[in-house]
Length: 113
Image (cartoon, rainbow, N blue to C red; front, side):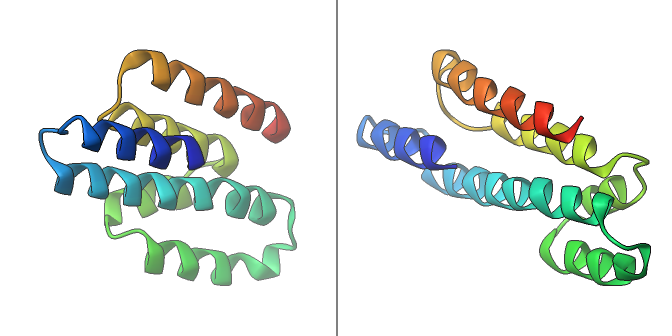
């Protein structure tokens, strides 16, 4: 998240084509970054806490499709990483920077296995 914010701000100084799209992309990324540790917690937690997790996901994700994908997954931490990867792909930054961010996600993925 920190890398994306910094790089988008740097790129905005170089005139990003659509600053509103950049902000929406950062918001999507922020939600997906939240979803990974929260999904991992729910995956390892008491099943009685499931309704609370489901409510939090539905409240935070503006897209019912994203919430449904996450909640319907058999391994939610990996689904959250998938959503995070897709959000990173939509960021208005160059490929080299995306590769650096992807390296961090690989480390997160190892923790969820």
